[in-house]
Figure 1 (spheres, rainbow, N blue to C red):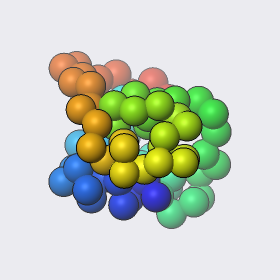
Figure 2: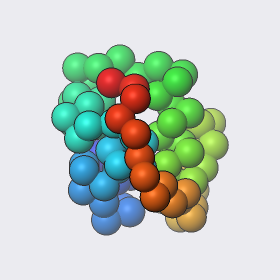
Figure 3: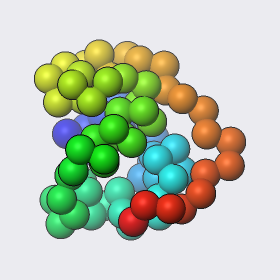
Figure 4: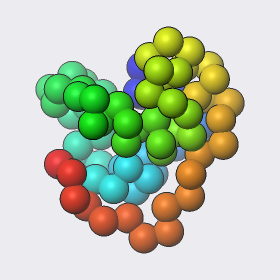
Amino acid sequence: RIAELRGLKGWTQRQLAERVGVHEMTILRLEKGSTQLTVTWMQKLAKAFGCSAADLLENPKRCAAATPIDIPNPAYTLR
């Protein structure tokens, strides 16, 4: 679902990674399922998409339509 939402936003993996504050390979692993999607990840992704973690799971169209946050200087802290 992450890749689908990212596509609806028109973002590359790199652009989503910058918004979340991780390397783009981390986003690739999340999308492929090789990195476990934890509550912490859900919160970070929801914030980047501009919606709640509940909407990310239950109403992804709302996340796709939400206004995302703007992250000027991301720090690669969570991998």
